[in-house]
Length: 389
Image (tube, rainbow, N blue to C red; front, side, top):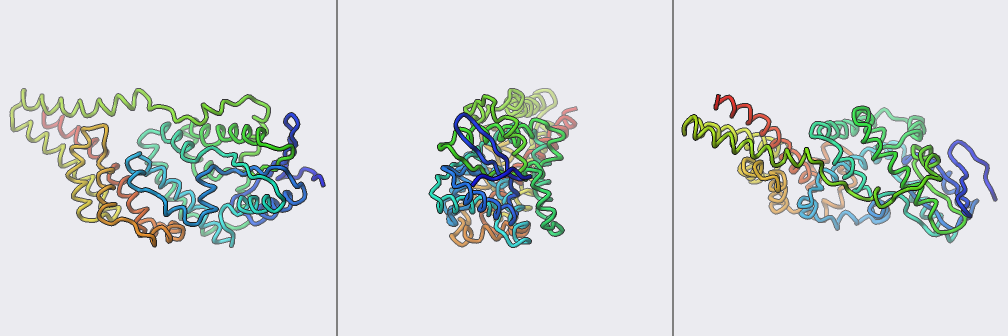
């Protein structure tokens, strides 16, 4: 039985394929019901969902979080990416709780109904870690701080949201809505979060197996998918994480070189007393502010000590950061237990829960300690120059 187009369903063709594209809100009961109805009526060969492998496992495997290797996350410098992902999940979860529906219910319903009608399930979205990593590389230090603040602020904005508001969110992608302010300053961020994914989704949907395909995506992606539907897409490029820019690399090595150079100049041209005072400012600014960052994350006292001791040294070594040291110490001192993983979906529903749960607290330790150490560098260098002058 064929369906006529409405505001949320669109018929597309590609070569010999007939595609029914459904635009949804990720926390909408109406969207979940529409998805079920369309799949049952169309009886497609394949159902495409706006999920990558990691997000698919997150919504279909309740115990997936228990496989998280926090030490590996810290060593691979992915603490902020994981925390950002959890904050986005928190935003959707709190809205869903107000409306009595699970976040991603329309995706779960699509998977379940696909199995019932004998259709295969095709994951059509780019890996969330690739998307966030590409966005992260684009942002500078203050843009990253702004992102963190905006994500935290979003966690307190769900109390007044109604079901009608959620239906209005169909016009936007959740990532786009949360990052709109940053996107105005960094148009490239929108390109990565929205435009690139539109291209990726269009390619994955039109090349999915089968002649009749139902595709379930956030409604914010529908205009972009239709725009890029017949365009060539370089998927390999979209899946790459670009190398760090030359300016970032130069600063990573240049700032430590400047600091060491200042100290050497202080000793040779202004005397041992001046050189010693310059070292003192470097150690105090980095150590104290890194320690304050760890304290703000409610780190273990020994973790705070490790942050204070490590920061002046790691700030001179671009290959390691104080937050990684503090995070690893926090893991060793209080390794998360099974109950922490089990409580994670509940704890991320509130700001307090982020500090209460050992998993998210460890991530906060990494990030806040790194922020403190970075601020310490900005504070120390002017003070060192002042002493030298």
